[in-house]
Image (cartoon, rainbow, N blue to C red; front, top):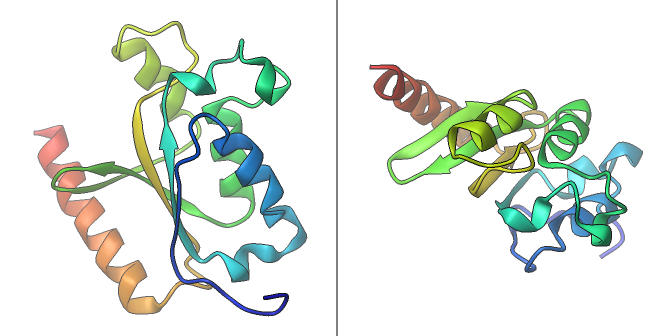
Amino acid sequence: LANSSILYVVVDVEGHEPKVLRGMHLERGYAKRFPLFQYELGGTWGHHDPRHNNDWTQGRAAGYLQDAGYELYLVATTGWLRVTPDFFPAASFLNGGDGCCANGNVLAVHPDHAPPPIVAAVRAAAATHALAFAA
């Protein structure tokens, strides 16, 4: 598997998502191996969680992925909503949280490595969903 690519991965490892994301070594150029993946959000991403050295928040993970070239989309029942690292503290506040986390799933799409029809479909669905969300 050293030189292979995987089109789509779902990361749902009961609170160890930050470890998996770090272990993918996307900052080393491995984004080509993981062009499209989904990961779970939740309370286990708390800034107080010692499993993540108390420093790996949802916002920090989103920044890491954005720096690696990924577009991030919150998975919704009707489509996707594009989000940035700034989204996560605000989402936690709106959900009555303590600023640590949002709940749901994020779809990470690398536009340089994911198949162009998939990138186009996700972007189109996100644009449509953003318009409905804003209304």
